[in-house]
Image (cartoon, rainbow, N blue to C red; front, side, top):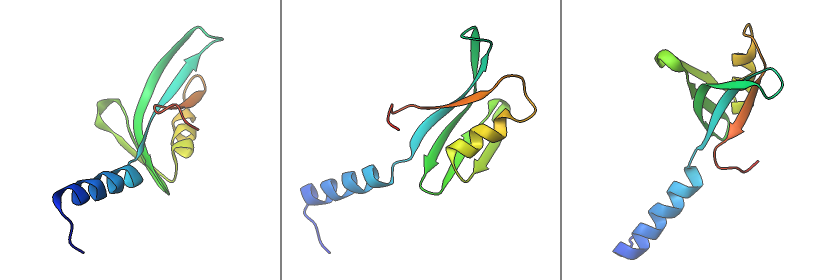
Amino acid sequence: MTFDRKEYEEFVAAMIEDERPRMFAVLREYGECEDAEVVAWGFAWTGHATALLPGGNVLRSGSADRAARVLERGHHGPTRLVWMDHSA
């Protein structure tokens, strides 16, 4: 397949949009609306997610939801997944 420059740029833009990961944060909340902290930033693709933790640790998981649940174990306060693109 051969493109002219405009067609190629449109093709590339569509490919990037189709394959773009969704960015998320994992938030740990303390008390009833008292305090919170971001415990990880991540990217989710279809079928897997990667979360970056403070100190450079990386968590790979089957989904962003699962990453949030893993980060909740053994810590104080529940975690909540927050999508940065504001879509469900």
